[in-house]
Amino acid sequence: MERTGSSDARVFLVGEDGALLEGLAQSFAALGYQTQVATTLSEARDASAAAAPMLAVIDRQLAADAGADALAIRLAPGGALVLYHTTAAARPTIATAVQRAVMADLTLPLERARLIALAHHVQDRLRVTGRGKRNTPPEQEAF
Image 1 (cartoon, rainbow, N blue to C red):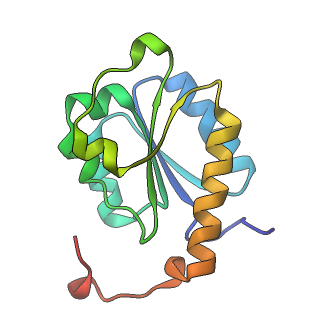
Image 2 (image 1 turned 180 degrees about the horizontal axis):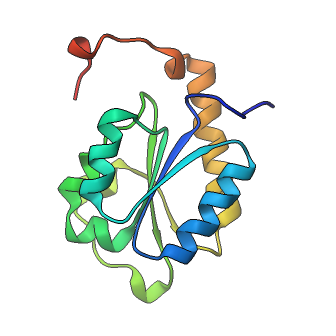
């Protein structure tokens, strides 16, 4: 299944653990995904306005501290939000609205293979439903 160079294969990685995010970015890039790393939710929100990702992978602590900013990240139609934490102790409580919007909550790097599988699933879902190819004029998009 060809995934390289597809405009709908954009993944945002948001968090402060530079080593973890760099490793994830390299894993995604090796599979043909376009990755962008942001250290804050506001940075990710601003970047998503220019190029909406199919998947936003966000540090659970950032989502707990500013859940509204996590929900403000614009996703591609049919895209998904994934939270991650690095240890069981790093699982702060998040707002109910954020919990409902999240596709998965993973422990990274232990569940890296599951994250990649989720990315493939979301991309396949976009391809099958045609959502990745939709050209809706900006004035008609719902935010």
